[in-house]
Image 1 (cartoon, chains in turn blue, brown):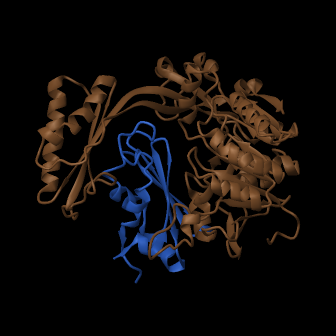
Image 2: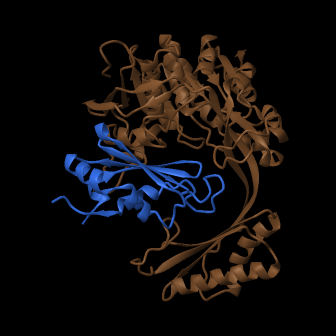
Image 3: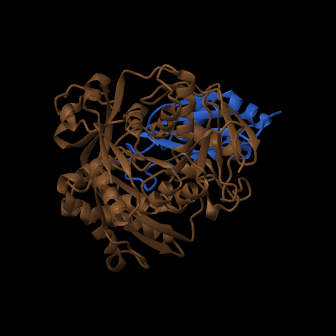
Length: 104
Length: 453
């Protein structure tokens, strides 16, 4: 297994109660693994205890990047959340812990 | 300093939030050979908060740190012919501009010609539109109207261009879309119009890359052993060199700390974006799916290929409303069974509050160091020390105060060794939701007011 952190970097942003998290490959090899294995379902599972809504994945092949939009991830929204991290700034770090199968 | 072959328009980024650093903006104004410097200082709910300030005192309502920033930046900017664009007017752009002119007169800085952009505040208009659906829930606006404190439309670059067209050296707005602060400089300088979609796209992409300032030049990026950022303590703010055809580069001062490369630019490009083919601003619908980046020299990235479709026929409007109170308290435990004592403490606070009859619609217990950011994970071992944080939502201020009170009282009345209890914290919640409002309802109220000293 290999962690997303070994293949990519990323940043979390907020809009209302929705978090978006970029996953940007360091290289071509990493991009192939991410594109194949870091699916909506995988991310949904990793965020299941945090997010109430669905996960949508967008691809940016020219930048070798994925953008995950995770609804209901911010405790009701930045302006009303009870959480310490109301903006979900730390959620990119959770994305980085996800483990993926290594390329054959 | 190397420049593109043709003299490009140079637009600097001066702030990414109300409490951002000031020195890097002064540095850019002083040595950056800038044409424009823009300051983005309004978070989602800031205008709502400042509207409350203005209702209490009509001379307030602008960004509180306005003069900290402007007193340092304005003299340098005027000396070097750098024009300033900012949304620091918040809920009271006129008061903001008057204050800046008071300063300019007092300090003999100037002459100064400014323009205030007015018309984003449509609170009164929305009181007559109770049926508008809220974007978040679909419920009608009327459910929030009794608690509404403000409603502000995200205006676009065109209104800032109107301000710049007066010849003003300083344009102060309330709510405008963040990228529009930067796009406006290019539209004004090159005379771009709204049917020139390639250039509007480039200007919007440039604005999006700059709007969070150091987040494109090495801020919010470093990770030891993996992502190094040179001289991070002296992080420099970025600027864009924009050519007339929309070709642009992102860069920073050579001797400032930080880095501008594909990695920093990609992180910022995708930041707060949902569908990359449809990033909606008041100026266009931006599509970055064919955008390309190239490192043309150290700390300089060339951006091409941004596309855009025409702007939508509505403005997004942020509705600020009061939403009760949050009370919070914290206390720490260490050593053997630290977590068990923290959990015992949390249960005590919960029971005490219930016994008193206080009601909370939401109650949250965090063990900082274990589960406060991402929830508890099975493989996490108990740490040597832990900080208990309790937060609860209620419509009753007294009930909110009780949360922190009961947590601090654990020092004496709770489990062994409770340490470092926080002062009880209560905040009145100003929440926001959004509606879409037809442009035709908003545009007639937009006006520009000029000031000279």
